[in-house]
Length: 402
Image (cartoon, rainbow, N blue to C red):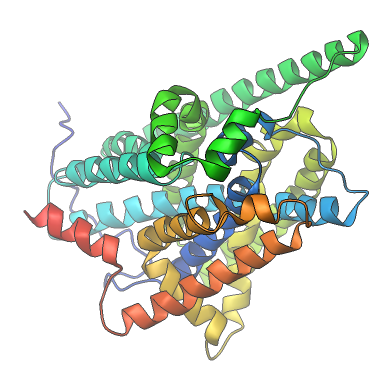
């Protein structure tokens, strides 16, 4: 009988770097994923009603006829759901690396990893309550507990779960998309208004309300605000296991195998994923779920191939690659910090620029994203000159040692 706490099999390391050294591409990809998620989240912070406003008007139609609409639409095509999918894949890669490390050392698995996942859930809960309602850490923690157990099963069992999860997810998203389309048709037939505006009370809460009031609002509406990880649970399982498979296949290595696999990801991910995402975005709000949760993962795979191809051609890393690597090495701290900075800049508890500049067009939003990215890249680079890990990563390590 197989026991989930059995020792990891004594097989050669699954890491494409058998010595256990860091794979440079993974750090760059992780840094790009952290800054890329902000390309989507920055519009949440700066929109009317903040986090709840995104829930009420998140599927509102983008108008590409204006410059402002074109800018926001471009951000949506390139980022909405794509970097979130990339980050999820990389989390699966990280899980596979830790499993491989346990295999090399003959340590039990999942073993102490359970505590790491539970601690991540606690961190995500604090982040959700105090900072950002669209937190991803809680969902990752729950998924990690399941996938960690799946790694003790056979490769065949893992593949079966992976593709079943993909099928269930696409079925759910397809049914919800069909329901949205029918609802939109009914509204147009009856002359109804689908709405899309945000209630004045919520707008005032984020523009002028106190910090305790915002925390209370998140807690009161926690069920609705936590629906995304529930809706995408099977997608998370699929992407975690996809990350495990890509890692084991050597897709992130610096050898010929890695370059060949990344070339395929580039060809299929961009060649098929980009036009599908453009089409889903241009189709309007009825395909919002399909664009964010259906076609986005395909383009995320293209980003792995693209970033990998660019890195293969770089002989000496410049400031951009150094910054992305530093953000990738401090990913948890960077993820939380970028959200804290956007809260302080956008909401009324800080500078309140979301209300003050709300009618000035999209350029200040783009500028905010660029400024926060610069702060994270420079700040993480300087931090790592003195410390080996990010501040939150250090807290996690300290807590798990005690």
